[in-house]
Length: 578
Ligand code: ATP
Ligand code: MG
Image (cartoon, rainbow, N blue to C red; front, top):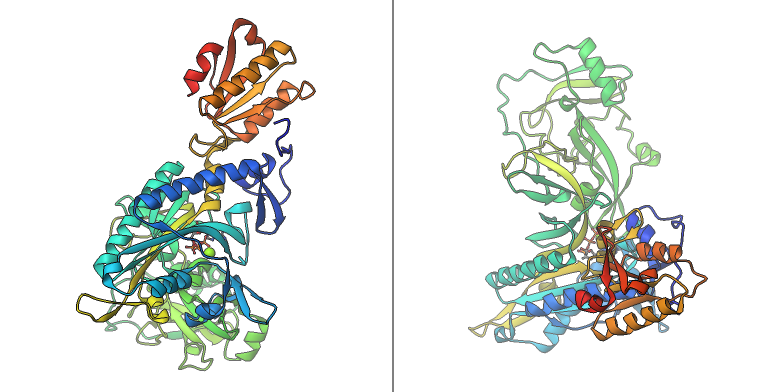
């Protein structure tokens, strides 16, 4: 450490909110260059390499072969699949000196498909799984939490190639098993959840989430074993009801009721129900947004949800991808005079109605369900408006928030919610990319068939942060042995030549025994207290303190995770640790 390129910091970086970000910067693992862009320092690189090694070992064990594509790519293949456009503002686009469009790869489906197409032509060549560990670029709207969500980050991505669906299923399963082994070894609590395949457009898709309060993903689980990303949860819709005997809709004066709360209060005062009070869930709230398509065009959208629920931004984004969601602004209201703010109802919405705005409703708005909703006149609502009888929408959308206690779609009980960090994503891509790029092989009968693909990612740099989210306490990091930058942190605590010499000797002996040792040999002007604080911050699993005990032939062994300490005879130390 007297020569190591390392400066530990006493204070948290000003822009850091989550523990992993604070500690990785303070302990000298990473350093910020620009938002979402970080340098790896010697300590950080060692942990990163260990994560990489685990992932590489498990990918090779399941039969995948490593390749590496450039990060700098030509536009053409991404045009063929339309992702040059569809990726929207998340794609880093640039031009070379000849004016050719280039991009920095956000993910490499196109390149892998083209490489296999280039070299393979027969069913006999398949199945095949290829992977790379490589830097990816995404101009994330909200880079966050240091390396947890970077704009440059390291990913392991792999791709499987099969002739038929059964083959894809087997490749998917082999990847899933490899991921289970990877995440067991990384040592954080994780869950496998059903995921929406999002913009990639596949079928079966699962995510591996590190369970963590600081995660950006919300997932649900039921006692009966259902687990899904909140974006993938489907609503249990009520059965449709026949219209017979339902009262006719009637518009009523409801002055000064532009919010759900004011409306429900007014209903209970002016139009009390015989059976029970009115609830927010009896009202139909119509939320307006604007979709921005990848080509830059804007399109308004109205979403009808029960009044006791908000529209969930992430669920909505998943449903409308690749379009992005923007607020519906005053200028949009001005362009649609049929909309009366606070009193918007289905009567004005839908492609068939006056505003012409596409109108999608929550699955709970089933045929025969009765609603109180805006009458499209200021200060007026309609009561007993029946879905399917009095209004129809342009379709259904899964955009309403999911709440604890909602039923699991598979009937396995009420859902509870928790947060996680997406660490891995596996999905059956199918033939979308192979189709677009013409990846075909001859089958057993000599007929050309389109290859079916799977696509599988692990966030390597993100994993360093995710492990740190688990492996820390108030004093600093506390790495699990398999990921720690060093096996042993050897601290010389004293100026006495006998202590310094004993330290030097142990350093040599521990290294000779095959251990990676971080040796705090900083001279006497760095106090033992400072050395201990640094050791706690850096988080190597075992610290050996060489101090006054040397006179009695002992050193102190401290375990970082538990704080346990014991004196160990110098003569036994190497054997103990090895
Ligand atoms: P997220 O929902 O977190 O943006 P994603 O769905 O875009 O992730 P994929 O495209 O499936 O992610 O990428 C595979 C893996 O790469 C993810 O599971 C995650 O671990 C990692 N990853 C994705 N984006 C980032 C990022 N900006 N910074 C660090 N790691 C990332
Ligand atoms: Mg993303």
